Amino acid sequence: MAEDVGIGGRAGYYDGIGAARDVIQNHLLQLMALVAMEEPTSFEAGALRMEKQKLLRSVSLPRRLDLTTARGQYAAGWAGGEKVAGFLEEDGIRATSTTETYAAITLHVDNRRWAGVPFYLRTGKRLGRRVTEVAVVFKRAPHQPFSETSTEELTQNALVIRIQPDEGMTMRFGSKVPGTAMEIRDVNMDFVYGGSFTESSPEAYERLILDVLLGDPPLFPQHEEVELSWQILDPILEHWAAKGSPEAYDSGGWGPASADAMLARDGRTWRRP
Image (cartoon, rainbow, N blue to C red; front, side):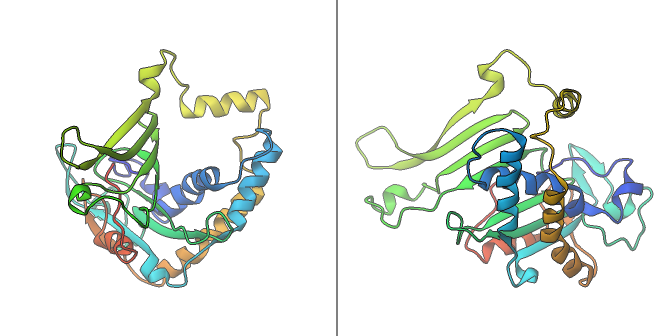
């Protein structure tokens, strides 16, 4: 979940809260639960909440939080064609603040379906663009029937669920390039709500307010889910609190170098939205 803006006028709230508490504890862990949970027996609130809680109870943290998490603060730079101030230069922010504006964490789910599959969650302010998406990246097949030269431009298959903007889905897979030579290249198959429907989707809080008025609770987490989310995040926050200041990253970029190193240790790179 990337934002291209800074904290704006929220200094009084944001300083001391940070990106992890503001976004990961609620938004991203809820998205993770919805993506990774087993299919509920119905879309009734009780069935949906039960599956989300089962998933959150199965989440575990890596042993080395210093190698599997990253945090940062945006520094002065250029964003949206404008010169912008760094986080520590914003009005109302203490010069000694250790509040993070970027957070990335690695999680595991200890069940049969997801054993051995890492989940990477990241959020930040003053990044390259405003985008929220879920990217499911598939492992490459252990055997490729094609030569290395014919697949050198081929990356991993991926299913990308775009939450905002341009809500929709993209499937990335390999296709043979037309011609006599054997060359396989990545292609995308896209679905965009705006291109398929003339009706406008309600704004995020419009749907929630309507559900409150109707007494329809499936989208609202119970306190058990909230407590489970904090149980996941609290050890990371305690680890960061003992580590001093976050790493600076350029405004308009995609976060601190430590976040790239975090994925590089697993032989992976961040998807560029």
